[in-house]
Length: 316
Image 1 (spheres, one colour):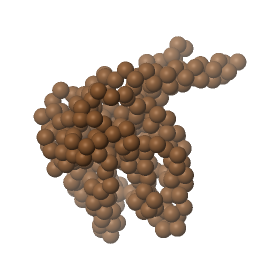
Image 2 (tube, helix red, strand yellow):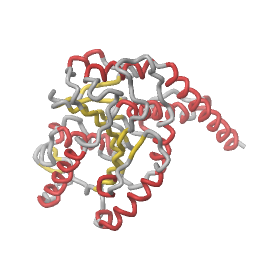
Image 3 (tube, helix red, strand yellow):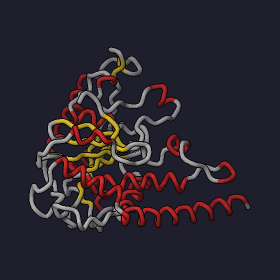
């Protein structure tokens, strides 16, 4: 593959051509990225997939948001994009709680943006990725984004019931969560600060049944300084290139790439019983599963009721 393609289309179904990208190898790794708009999800995934900090943005396998789109607060990724290389399956999700995405959704009466529908869309995609991924990268400009964490904790409860799927799925499988703080300042990189913030993240997920976070602070929370996207032989802002910073960034990415190969829970009861194509079948079953959609509708109904109450109180 030269670049990523759409995995989920606009109506939430898997693109027909995805099967051609996958093999019968059982030794595969699914890595997803979620987080708010502009945090750098596409950039981080591109680096993990083989790009480096010195390449131009148009060479990235997941195209980062353009300068013009960023200035207008527009998003780049819609639904989920996929890139496959060397049995690594990378999934890039549209931004969480994005006003730009919300604008494209149906509106409530009176011209209000339908926040409940937007939240339901975020929960659907997040729950889907938590179930089908070995590791989910939570990428944000802040070390502890409460809105994102609350969304993840809610999404982990929205699970399909695939009892007839074969090979038999492991109900005890846990998905790895790795938090990445981008655009870090010098104080963010202090070891004592990272340990303290990693502890907060572990506390937030201490009772999680299906999500796990490393007990090692520097594997739980990765802190990255901002790199300027290179555009046509010039870095954004046209500042002098900081070679030391770029080298450190690439080194962190290399370490993360190695870490993501380890500590993966099998999707199935039997070891290595699922290959890439079977994984795709599982993804399709999740999308069709009635239990998954029933639970999602319950959360959607609850959010809509709360939104209606807030709207009524605001009109008084």
